[in-house]
Amino acid sequence: MIRAFIAVELAPAAVANIESAIAELKPIFPAIRWVPPANFHLTVKFLGDIEASQVQAIADALELAITPFPRSTINAKGLGVFPNVRQPKIFWVGFVGAELARLAAAVDRALLPLGFSLEARKFTPHLTIGRWRQGESRTGDVKLALDRWRERDFGVTTIDRVILFQSELKPAGAAYTQLKVIKLNDQPID
Image (cartoon, rainbow, N blue to C red):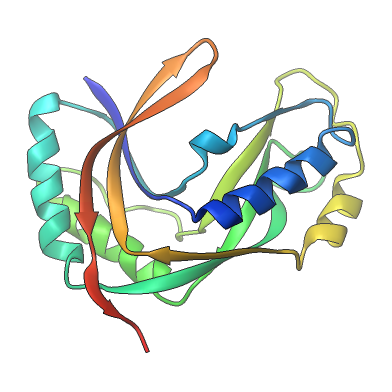
């Protein structure tokens, strides 16, 4: 079995800006396990455990559904937490981009015939940058940090491909391997 997900990689400049933000946040939030920049990605759909024999069928379905999509841009902007400020568990960076929800919906529909369920929740584009350690106190002023970083612009990424990743959980953290890369249409949106 392969633990798999579909994602978009971020532009190096956006990754660097987010990494700088994390460096500022670390002393304020010592109870957070921060995601290493090498693992930054915007998940479009989490698949869970799949058979190795499904990889090509998934790639084929994705190619058919998303190759016609034009390249577009997304902007990494602002910080937030899930589920809420009083009981934060996940620290995230948000994304803005008109085509992002359409792309996620196309991926969702493309995989339905292969037995993958449609997402029950509304697509909320985000990059998880940290998780509070279980049992640790929620130190630091979350609301103050969110207010300070709410409008922070971390940079633009061009979406020109979608990647099917394998995720291996290891003691040091997750390791990701690209299984298939599906390129979008070469024509950018005006």
